[in-house]
Length: 396
Ligand SMILES: [Zn+2]
Ligand SMILES: [Zn+2]
Figure 1 (cartoon, rainbow, N blue to C red):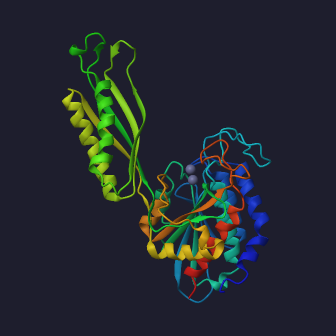
Figure 2 (figure 1 turned 180 degrees about the vertical axis):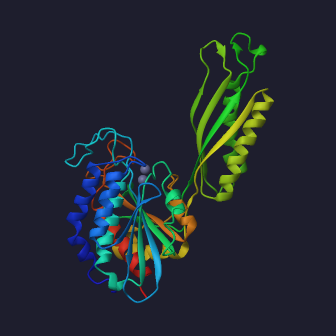
Figure 3 (figure 1 turned 135 degrees about the vertical axis):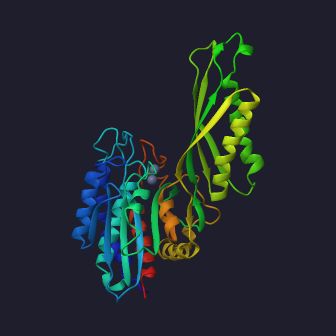
């Protein structure tokens, strides 16, 4: 057993780990405003003896831990996102958010605490690490904006990163389970804005006008047929129109309607195909009704695609931590998205889920809910899986 007393070591750090999570939970900061959060992270990493760089890609923080088990070796990046959400917490907890309108309602407070505890743990085991561990504390995940500037600011260089791992605490999965899967895992996400233009006029004289609302209604239906008729039945994908706005009064034909929606896919080709075909179908349907449609695509992020080898490494770490029976089998893909995808595009890696729900304790609220909470037993599990995977990856 190369990891010795790892489990006991983590158990000893449990109280500090939980307290760390609660302190970040009390003081949430929104995307790009994570200044106090970043300062607390940098301070913790420095005290653990890491080389710290602040202001990476905005409010990001990078900590570098160099192993001492010989010269050279590989570099593993551990990524944790740090931003909160614009939600007022309604939970009656001693450590509830102290800022109305801001809440760690996705578990990123836990991600920070896990990664900082991992840094402490590994700093005490430098002599077992052949290579380096780089910690990337990423801002603005909820806006899908923080990964890209960190990467363009050089987080993957000096030393060059060979692989990346990261986790998301996940309340839909019961605490004690860890979800690990190779291949596409989280979907891509892009926003679409579709403007349908007609020619407004009197609602009683439609023949003298061009009605964009009727055209928009047919576009909404026609676009759904892309999923049932043009994408392979073996390739899941989603197109959801979340808003439709237009018109001024009940008896006036509108000039223009705007539809906004989201497109999700697991395959880069499906993603590109859907974004192209939505525009073509919308224009074609609109033209058939004398209207015009114009599509604007606001690119979000690609799918999170897990590398087979790194995923196997994480699976072994998860098995050693929770047992194979606590790693759910079958297709575990999620239709949500995460800009961890950009790190996974840059180098081979694995993004995985650590269950944090608990029906008996009433911890069932969904992510991004004002009632969201986690079972804190998830925290040491997250630390242990990351620690085992990291030590394995950097063993000679
Ligand atoms: Zn979230
Ligand atoms: Zn999240």
